Length: 166
Image 1 (cartoon, rainbow, N blue to C red):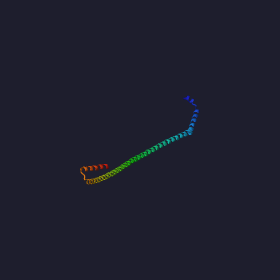
Image 2: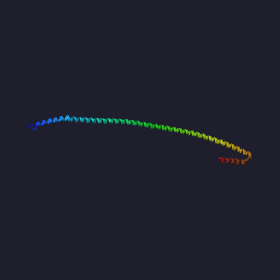
Image 3: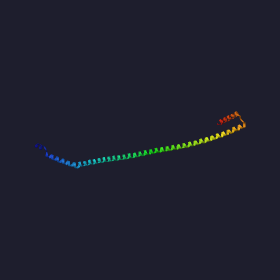
């Protein structure tokens, strides 16, 4: 061990230790504190940025939920309006059908009345024509004093005249 102690140069060792202590103190005073402060500030700014990102993400999720809720309300309102329009259209169609049916019934009743009136008019005309024919036949029979053969010719002539008239 004596040889090892002879190999160690104590004045160099002590000056190196003092130089190291001075360097240590200078680095700690002027370098490490500012560097550590810069690192702490950077860490805090990064944490703050992450917090802002999380807050923004939360805001986006909230806005998305509000948007989806609003969208679903709009969709429900649109469905309700479509259903209301369909029901109103069906109601209008039913009213149109009822009106058309009522008009058809009125037209049918009017047509039946017109037919009945025309039928009565035609019957009255036929009655008058039959009466006129009877009077005409009776007058000719009285004027001519017909026998059976002349009577048949006279009736046939009237039938031919009626056919020509119709």
